Image 1: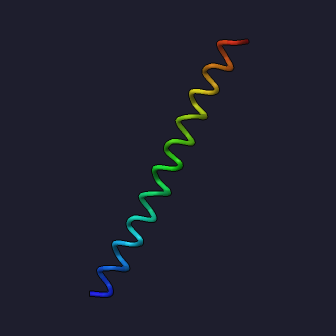
Image 2: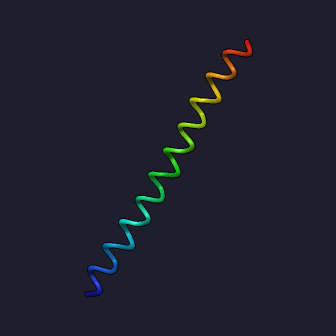
Length: 39
């Protein structure tokens, strides 16, 4: 039972990191596009 709990916890952590980098990367792309349009 403990192994399952640890696995779920690690999975949730990885998911959070993935979504965070996803949002951060997406914002960077959008920001660069807007910056290019301003230029």
